[in-house]
Structure formats: C-alpha cells, structure tokens
Image (cartoon, rainbow, N blue to C red; front, side, top):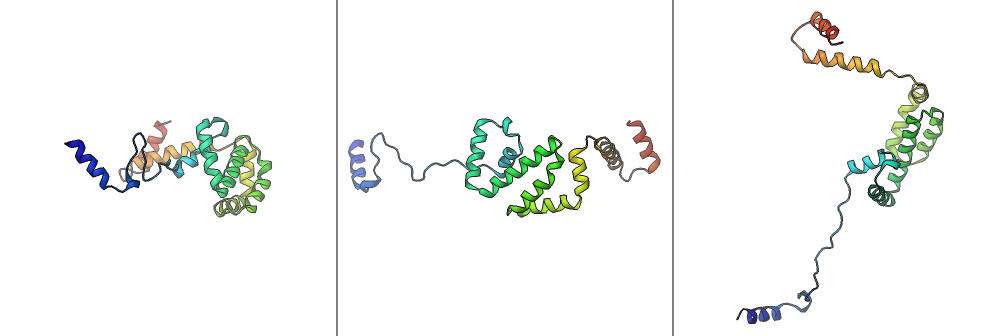
Length: 164
C-alpha cells in the first residue's frame, strides 16, 4: 500500500524534479567561503618561506583575483625585508615604487615616512634602538595608571624605585 502511494506521488512531480537513483543534485553548488581580511593579512605579513603550502596556494588564489592586493603584498614584503635585514639604503627606491602604484593607503604611509625620512633611514640602518627606554616608560605609565587618584608623586616615586 505504501509503495503504491509513493508511485502515485512520484507521477505527480514534474519530470525534471525527480531524482534518479544514485544521483544527488543540489540546488546551489557548494563553494568555499572566502578567507577573512584578517586571515589574508596574516598570510601577507608572514615570511613566505614559513607559510604552509596550503596557505600559500590560498594566498595565490586571492592575489590572482585582486591585482591591487598583489602589488600591496609585494611592497609590504619588500619593506619587511628592508626592516629585518637593515637595508635602509633601499628606502628611496621603495618609496618611488610605492608612489608609482595606485594604492592610496600606501601613499599615505610613504608621505609619513618622507616627512621623517632621516629618522626612518637611521632606524632601518643603525643597530641601535630605544627599545629599552620605551620599555621603562611603558612600565612607569602602567604603575601610574594603577594608582590613579590614590596618591601623589612621592608614592609613585617609591613604587617606580621598588619595581626596578
């Protein structure tokens, strides 16, 4: 009885909507979700040689579809290489290359670097930095924030001296 009912219902369906045995169809093809901007930024900012092969392939797929992102990746990796290998002498060529491309956000960065070119050049070439001093300033500011509104300078002075 149940099989007869199923046969009658199947006969009432339009021919194209019937599923053939062993064949499955989907109304919408399944596609992979695009990676988030944060994930793509992570791929761009990592060293290419440390990027897993699957992520490298995914990044290349994204870069094929967006030439602006491809140019941005080239500039970012070039600047990172200058920074890590202390190649400040390459800065003028990098700035010229950035200006030639139509990437407004990088033009803003290049203008900021150009305003303080001597300091950036020194930071990219000289082995000295102010990291230790900045660390102490950060620590003192943290101590000051912890006691906000509770005491004056004498207590802050004692806490800074005792924290050393």
